[in-house]
Image (cartoon, rainbow over all chains, first blue to last red):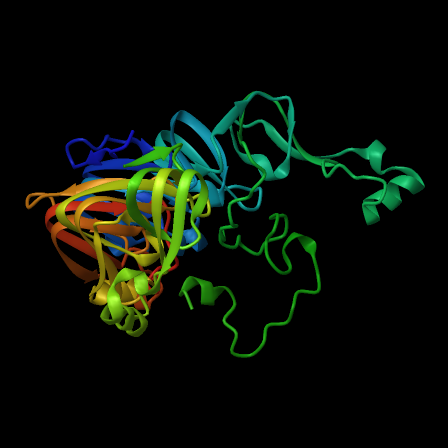
Length: 258
Length: 210
């Protein structure tokens, strides 16, 4: 192929991949939720508005449930075709039918408002519930696996239909004096695979085909409450939170994008 | 004659003619080749001074000979562009090679350049022949017609050709100041007739987070 394909609004696919790295969304007066800065180009009349926009109150009530995450998302609204891409990673769309899927926050690019976005209890992950389409990025194509399964933490993209995610350590390898030495120093050859995520139960696990992580995306803080994992300073019964300096706004800073 | 060997290597068949390529981008060749660094990209003294003044640095070499020469740069995806007495506007960092007969120069881009983090000037390639441009991930080529203007994120823009007017659009309002910006506040709007090349990745731009 020596001449590249030229696309115009007619030939661009509707809600499908343009190439492995670019996804085209068609808007016909409809709305999509979009992670900030993932739009690369668009035809037609499309408005991008921050989540705090008053007009979207109803929409957000039904499909957006992570208040402190709001500054990372925008609503695209209008009619036309828009192209989404993320740092030249592979992008793919997935359909959920009355289901649920949990995904690493940095990997989710966009979703239809028929889906509801919620923060997962597992820190750093987001859960989508309902019926609709969403677009996710991964480093290399996504592989679907059935539990029971143990996966490398860096290769995990997400999981669907609720298998139980937990940590797994190769205990035998870490045991004893030699094991201790190995785990501390790496001498004696740790394979780097002593720690895995384990999934059991019915469902699907999504993996990417490299161990290169997408840069972490802040998922926003969860309420400070006992029993909430990762509930910030003081959360989860932990003590000794760093004292806040005068003039430091803490979470408010993030909220207002300072 | 330009052709792609895979998507990340450019193969150029030469029969005694010359091509201009980014300095140091040759990865292999067969036959007889001579490589010569072109001071100031072969644009003469005036071009050299302009490039120095505008900061649109471009170090090119001239490759001349018989055989096939292969070019690549940091595993970037390569896109071929055909020009028929046409002008291609491309960022100097995205230009890999051009036919020897094409003229290169610099032009002022206005505000767009300031926002795309590439400086206020861009490189032009003029004439009839072929050029190879690089992108982070395979580029998407979008046609712009008078009925269908196109808006592009400054960070994803790499090149355009044809008769296009570009306007810089800013959607900064009080919400942006409040930290509720849309992340898409700065856009370049292309109107007219031509092609725009975008890459599936965004450079860090001044307006990127706004």
